[in-house]
Image 1: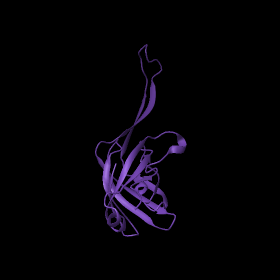
Image 2 (image 1 turned 90 degrees about the horizontal axis):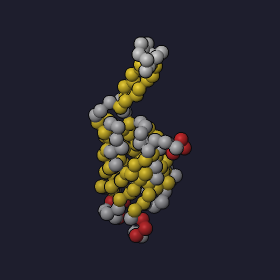
Image 3 (image 1 turned 60 degrees about the horizontal axis):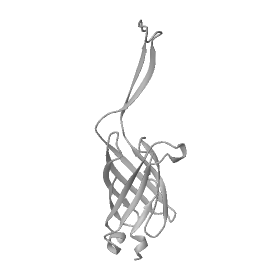
Length: 152
């Protein structure tokens, strides 16, 4: 195997790049079983995740043989919404207050990733992620018989 294939860029795991917001995070796929692990057990597939401030987004990456894959990730992240409405009798806040506030509920949440590659290979996995963070771990498999450990 060529040295250039040891670090393969998996581009955009969690994405909202078109809107210019949402944050990014790196992600690693570690082949545990299957043809990729048998060929090079030291291979780490690098990914860039986008829209880490959201609960879903596009994902794209390249397998070691340079096949491009695109799909989506999603996380079941509960949020609370509180609304403020009232009349204020103080000089500082004359007229009252109106507003809404959205917050992430603390805890550990589950998520999924699914991508389809240009050659028809499908990658599917599950992960857990900390609420309000871009940190998590999980497992993924593909239709070529590979099993991956997923860390981000």
